[in-house]
Length: 360
Image (cartoon, rainbow, N blue to C red; front, side, top):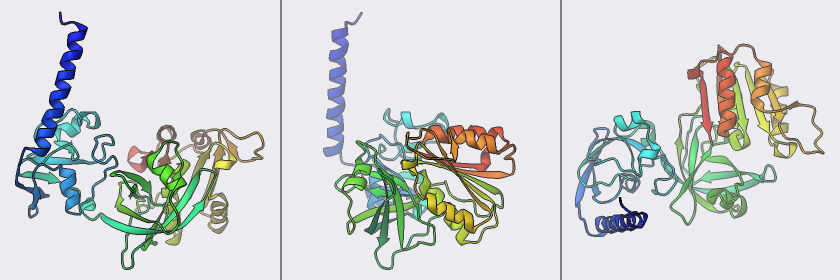
């Protein structure tokens, strides 16, 4: 039987060999120029030895990625048809069995060592990188800010209501995803909403360091969470925390377009100090008889004077509806909240394909 000490020694040797091999692969191995073919289009000539993600960035193709290529976010998934090599242990925690069968890989982990063929969804090929200037920072609550960014003259972006952008954290190789809070009509810039998370790389930068006049790079738009504009169904919107951002974009877009769809917007917060855009939504409710705004507080402060709904937002929805079969749901916020609301909506008959959500 191998002793515990021997196991530690062998593990250390294996780790050291792994580091040596990685260094050799990075600095000594030479793969020359390789062809990177995207969607059967004309191949791109790229430098072998780089990751697929880096090769795409070098060619101004911006797929979702947040961690700077360290295989900790799992966002940079694409289907590799040829030339991807063996699946790596660093990839498997982020891939489902179906994705593995379909040759989906993390592009930050796949190195281009030979000609390679990949599939990129067409909407991602339209993503651009923008230099923006911060024109306004608004305090929404004690820990939440609205950031208004404007593009350089002549640059425009036309997201679908509900999509997100990636914010490049200055001085790092990392990105963070933020839902776009402004409606699609604001093509010359984009608003985001950031809530402070202690220790959060980007939220601390946004809430404590970012200043008006600063220039920031963003990429976008991204995401499959957006308003289904061709639908005529009644809408239930649910938000928690900074999940207000895409719901704000969706509702503002609907009423800019003069929708006749009935829209009920539920917002779940802990206490009154966590409410924002409250008065704005009440004004919207007065202006449009097909819009209803419902707020529930789950953990009020002792001095809160509140006559509205209390408890978790999914319990309020459960109480207000008997049948949601012919409705659509747009949900954004903490995973626990979103999952609880999904459970209620499906119990009330809302088809799963009519529920669109973004968890963070």
